[in-house]
Image 1: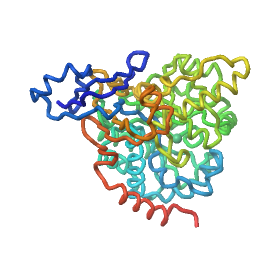
Image 2: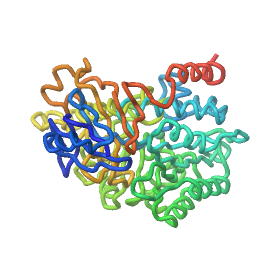
Image 3: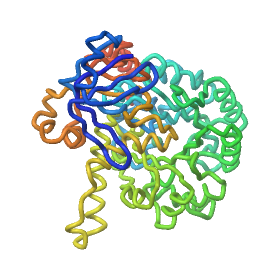
Image 4: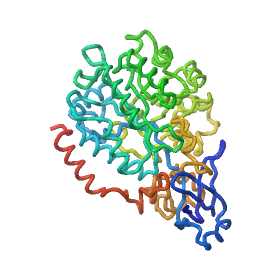
Length: 467
Ligand SMILES: [Zn+2]
């Protein structure tokens, strides 16, 4: 067992978030064993009971953050000039031209870049929605799984898919989509090989058709059946992200996106949906009633001009809401702590836009709710009760920020939780996943960041940049 001694711990607990100064955290290579006042452990430390004593006085410790939506490969096309000022459908149109050149190495390097960014922001678990398998390429799910294993992040790899090409009324070019039968066969393969249903699993596979406008209805249906046969397998997809998508569904299927999924039995406690920006009150009720989770991606929604998801209403209705940074082509920085801040700002803006004068004196979206989105909210979306907090029994996933980081100066003395959410997000100093140190002194342990960045820039310059 190891101990982080005499530190400040911030953890969700029940409905609140507790800030515990002068506390110590005991953990092994799986879970948190004990959390209590530092003085309780002094004698045991002197008795040499712990394999390692980590001095925590200059740190604030939080649970590893949980990211519920990403496309790790998209760091290849972040800041792409032709897609900087476009809304979703045009943005996708510009990007497919580049993504059709993906290969195993490009995906693997890009995934490492995106994972490194997440870890350095304090995130220890990520979902990755990987749906882009160009025809004839050597791209496979292992490109992402290998990157996660190398850097040490906990992952839910969503075996994504697109099967409705342009010639059949979908959005992507035909050479960017797969056949339904090939997708289902590969879903089966990766589930058999990699899915770990155990409580503290470091790797799970979720099934994730990309969206209503690039998947056949049959694929959506068959994917639901496959996931439910396996019991512990979650379903994920993009939904109600833009008004364009709403129009597409009304024209092609004669109903709004949520109704389309409801009719396919694609709602439930084993489902989490990315975005959910454009929902009416009935749809919010339906998500609550079916226990469907929502992954909120405010930066991406703002970057693409899609809108602001009604998070206050969703939370008040009892919907499980987590946070996502989304792919780096629509949120060019994958910083989950920064995303909690963005969620708070977006929710407050929406309060004013919707409430107007009537809401002048209503309390604003609170700091603790933003923190919960990035921790227990995400864990709930991923059906992982051991993640997102640091109470005994939690997974040994946590992040240590230095309290003398200039970004927190003054703020830490006022309120450590508010400092982390409201100040500019500091860089993580140490990050542990399953009790293993994966970030040390602000650097990724498993690789050289400069070398990785150089290789990434070479690949982007050679194949993913407009000339
Ligand atoms: Zn997405």
